[in-house]
Length: 333
Image (tube, rainbow, N blue to C red):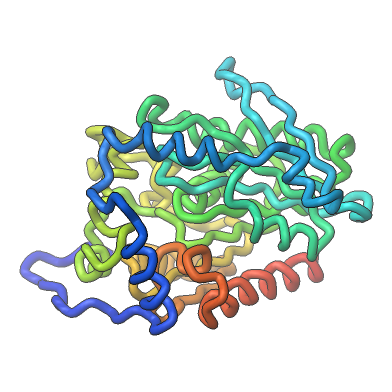
């Protein structure tokens, strides 16, 4: 929620979880460039991502997954969209699908990187993982990203039999900017049509371009993904429209005036990250609209803590909570 005029925010930030603090300090000691995010750094970041992209045969993890990468039509004549399709060996026919939207602040990352955790989840539940490669900002501002995610989902639903998935059991999921696009996709499907989503699993999603919640101010400059980086992400997506009154809900889901009719939702966030309060508010508004949401606030968690320190107790608990929610969702639908 926004601050009321005249109110101030406590200057003392939430302390980091002890294990995360150790891991974060080690990361800072090794990271050569901690300068604020800028357009000048984009080419370096993207080159690092490109170097980390694995070959398709490597993504098969020694035959544990069948992997292919179709290019599918964009929305309304837009460029084709790459989808990475990974199916666990021996998975049942007419299986569920995890439709994954990668993070990276809308401006970076790739649909073929950072997949270890979600691949393990797909294998655990015999689900096909489909990771969508959307166009990146700022070269491609809103609505390119949500249009690509939506077009990819429509193609998946239309080719469900060919893919061996049940179009009624698609769960959309994403981390950070991918969580923002997952939430926007759920709103898009609700309003514009498409396959009925079984659920949305939102991991530390960016939801509000206004970037002025109490936690955004309280936790500024506490970790790398602070208020300045959040501002850069939203400015990359929206340009000068960021923070203005007419930002659409399909760009920043917190702008939605009606959160009724959404699929069952899982949200989680660390208590020590700037996104905390906007995620709490989104869950609260889903409940107020009569919807179903499960919310976890991890004490001392920072943005992407389970990726920075996967062996930490808090990280293992977070991954287990997401999988427990997904297990219940799939078992009851």
